[in-house]
Image 1 (cartoon, rainbow, N blue to C red):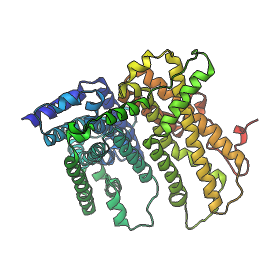
Image 2: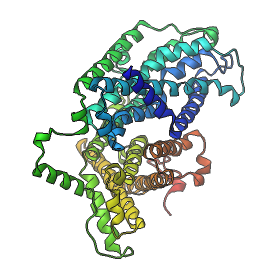
Image 3: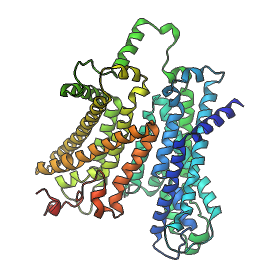
Image 4: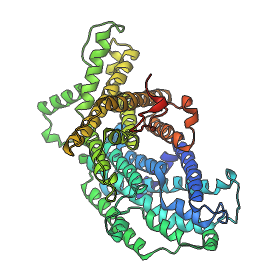
Length: 516
């Protein structure tokens, strides 16, 4: 019965927060968005707007927003006890480690499944936005796709993220899993793995989207409207593989989880003066250096910015993300940007153009890091010390902003250096330094700085860590996707977007968009 109490508490906690209902609204909007995209894939007006095939195509993929929400809920399930300083009280209750672990996991799964109900509801709203033929609501197909496809995919996402949080004992485990999921969505939209055996590619797809898409394509017009999808045998093998992997991760995480280990506590016998001194030293890394200056003098905010910048650079998460971005750039060049039928030498323009597909990853990294930097003092519970310093909030915020812009400069320099090294290794010594300066220095760096400023504004106005992350990510998606949906003519209204950034030509350069 205690397990049921934990599940019920976790479920009530999630839906008692206004941010959860914002999640539901965003997921509902994603259902409309993906439903419109599914309808456009058929290109036939004989297929109904609310056809069964549309339901299967949408529910086969959890989508970007639902994936991010699932990762955030799974990552916060255990870490919020440490964040809100209630771990000592929760762990002191008469509950076993395993029971507490399962209660948190099952409560999170139940919350995610209920939130996911907004996804198929969004697909039902598609006829309100598009003119076309509408048939009866495919209730049976929606239920089939929801439980056969979406629920299993969400279980895989939550299991991986929840386990990563247990192993890392930090929210960063959830962020790493979220980055990996976003990478999957990018690779699934490209022609990746064409040279690999077809069965191997199908098995490596964690969500089985490709098999569902192929099955829907083979359906007749009548079956697309009212029929049920005949799942291929390979899909069941795929489900067995990934569900087995998910259960294995959960089992390993359950063995690894304990109250003492997750909270980072040591036995009472091992507490000594040295450990206390180490704790003080670790906390002092978050504190600003002692400065005696007026809030209006330049050295004051520069010194604080230097302190914040060095603290960010020393973090393992920063180093891992930068290495991930560099590796992703190399993958784009060596795997995703090659054509055996038309081999060609990589030029500077081709390398700098990769900043566009990389923008979503750089943007997510900068948005999340900016939000975490704003709330860091409250996260590690040293905000009273910050407030007691004779430094205005404006100076502290300016220092944080300058530090994050410095991080953006490091990211841009890392991508530039990697591109130059690639050109030198392949023998392309005709390096256009001016184009590097324009694309990475002007376009990319200025866009990164604007995204950081946007994340700062959202975090300050919303004043909620996870809610600000979600809103910042949604705004980033709007900024990145708006030009792709025909809003380029209104470029002067788009924040963080430089008109003409994708119109470079080897012959004419940027043409009318060139610098005067």
